[in-house]
Image 1 (tube, rainbow, N blue to C red):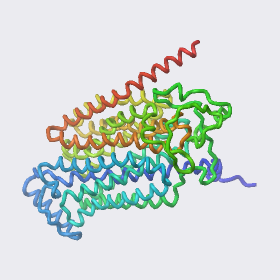
Image 2 (cartoon, rainbow, N blue to C red; image 1 turned 30 degrees about the vertical axis):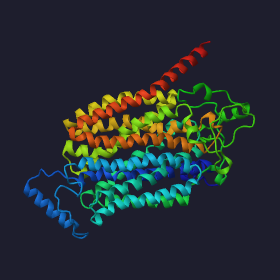
Image 3 (cartoon, one colour; image 1 turned 135 degrees about the vertical axis):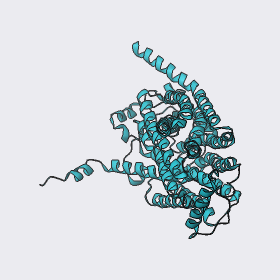
Image 4 (tube, helix red, strand yellow; image 1 turned 45 degrees about the vertical axis):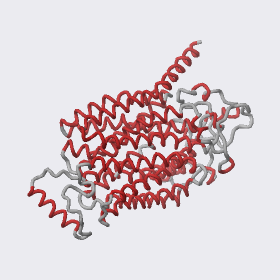
Length: 528
């Protein structure tokens, strides 16, 4: 018999279940990357919506002639301003642009609390598909304002509000789906790698928007809208919500070892029953993240926060019940301030680079992607460290502690030249996005599979929505505050971001203290 080719041997070396898990990992990665891809254009186009008019008269006339020639084939514009796109061509443009950010993010924050509750009662594939198609529609709607020559502020605000609401379908859905397929082993590292879809989406969105921004900024929105709509169709055709839907094997994960939040370390690490101890010998990646049914021999007097009836016979957790899970409130408030910092960079960094480095909108958008490149490494690093230390809160706290002085250095060093800006963008991206990535993925999964849920697989969607929804309140406040503070100087914006990092760390101190105390008690127990 002839020897199999190397490629075929590689393919057959993996089981059917492993190939399906790799497929779901990749699919959900690109599905949510398309969400962030569609959010990024507004930050790139800001430099085109308002232009600085300090250039000489000759340069202005030359630029105006070139601009008129470019749009001749599209439509003759009635906007006669040379300072950008009306109504953003006025001196209060920062407040108006901030209002666009706030409209999207406030709607996103409100919708997120509802999205998790709705999502856990509907099929994920249908729910996510509808959300992605609607997101594509409203993203493209903003760009249509260019082609239809619309200069009404409320048109753009309503497009942002509608887009913010429908985009809340994404995060609870993909986290629940990935949670259904992957186990607890090395969860921080796996989800750190998976969560890089946020930065990948931001990078792709920046590059696509920057390609069109100087010639036809409407396409900077239309093209991402088309992409996320196409990915919605892909979701409908290929997304598999649960391994059992295609008869893939899965092993209900035990509570033999969990990555803990400090508030419930010993309760989660209670010894498991003999029937479950066999799962220790299995590959941790193949262990299932969620338990679909509680072992019949489990203690009947265990406390539970589950109420209501959900799909497939499992109970749907209530909103207040999710809040009673130890660690949910602390991590939610921490994420509020961590996301405030991250989203301020997301929406205002290109404009800051334009003002400080005096670059055009395209080059500023391209340069801003380095912040997201740093975020990829930061998320993976945070997951790896938290897996090694088995301390989620301490890992987040360490990165937040380093982030505050790094932001001060960024505000100072970025004025010294392009090379210094590049270095600080990478470092700041890693430290700012590391805690944000860890809390929204591994921490949410830890809390969503807490012992008090008694194996309720539907609870993860609600817990994730509460944590990310609270964080989205900060995401809405950050860009708004940046728009209000920036006229007094960019240094004041960075001071605001440093204070926010300090507040995020403050809300974690209680959990960090418990993690350290539990570690000391565990060490003392081993010595005896």
